[in-house]
Amino acid sequence: MSTLPRSPALLVLPRLRIQSANAISSPLTHGFPSMTAFLGFMWALERRLADTDFAIGLQSVGVICHDFDEQVTDGGYVKAFRLSRNPVDRDGSTAAIVEEGRIHLDITLVFGVKGRFAQQDDAQRQAFADGIGSIVASMRLAGGSVFAPTRHDQRTRPWLRMVDQDPAAARDQFRRWRRYWLPGFALVARDDLLQQRIGLSQNGTKAPPMDAWLDLSRFNWRSRRIETKNENTGESNARIEWAHDRTEGWIVPIPVGYAALSDLHEPGTVRNARDQGTPFRFVESLYSIGQWIGPHHLSHPDQLLWYAHSDDAQGVYRCRNDYARSVSDN
Image (cartoon, rainbow, N blue to C red):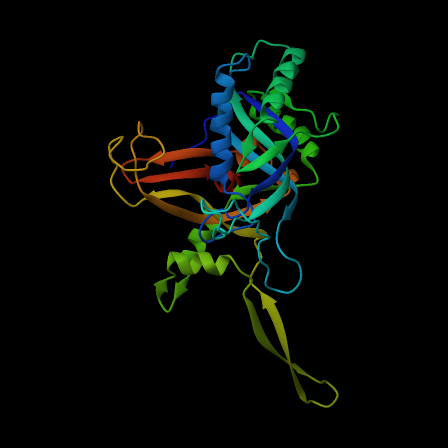
C-alpha cells in the first residue's frame, strides 16, 4: 500500500463557500462531493499556478466541512433533488431532465505542499498564500462556483506554514492550527472498518464486500428481550429493548476512486474520448467507508490529508488517507 509523502508545509484556504457543487458523488452515493473531485481540484490548481509567480507543488488535500445545504425538497422521509429546466432542444421543444444534485458548502481546504518558500519569512509566505487565494476564487470545485470569505481575519485569511521536522514539535503545531477549523468535521478513510465487517462470519463464511458495505452504511436496529423478576411477588416481567450497532461514530459510504473495466487503449483509438492525446480506459467506481470526525481529534496532518495512488497493473486508481493506519500505530 502506498503511503503519503511527507509535505514540508501546509497551505490552508479557510471558509470557502462553494455554490451548487455536485451532490451526486457516484452511482450509489450522494450528499457530499467525492474526494476525487477535491484531488482533481488540487491538480487543476497546480496547473493554474504553474504559469504564475505562485508556482507550487501540491501533494495532498484535506477537507473540513463547516456547513452544507443539499438542494432537496423538504418534508417526509423521501426527498428529491430540486431540478432546473435545462436549455430547450434545437427545435424548441423541452429537453429531457437529467437529474443533477446540487449542494452548497462551507469548507476549509488544507493542502500538503512543497516549493521554494522554505527560506522565505512569514510575511513573504503570507503574500504567497494571499495570491493563491485570489486565484482559487476564480475556479470551480466539483462543478460549483468558489467564493472567497466576505470578511478577512485570522480565521478566514489563507495561510502557508512550514511543518516542523521534529515529530513532537509538528504535533504541537498541528494542535494549534486545528483549533481554527472548529466548528467543523473532517472526512477521513476507514477502510479498516469495512475489512473488519467483511471478516465477520455469516454461517461460517465471510460477508460479501457489498453486503458488508451496505451493512456499515445504515443503522441496524435489533430488539432484545430482557427478563426481570419482581422480588416481592416472584413474577417474571419481560420488556423489549431496541439498540443499534453503530458504535464507530459518524461513518458514511463514500466513493474512493476507479477500477478498470477494460485494457488501456492507445491515445486516439477510442471515439469521442475527451482527450485524444492520453491513453484511455473504461472504469467503474470504487467504494469504501469514510468517517466525519472533529479536527480536534486529529493529532497530525497525515491523518487529515488524502493523496492519489494508482496501480496500472491491477487497474486501480484511488484516493487514500492514512488516518486508520496512524491511529493503529499509536
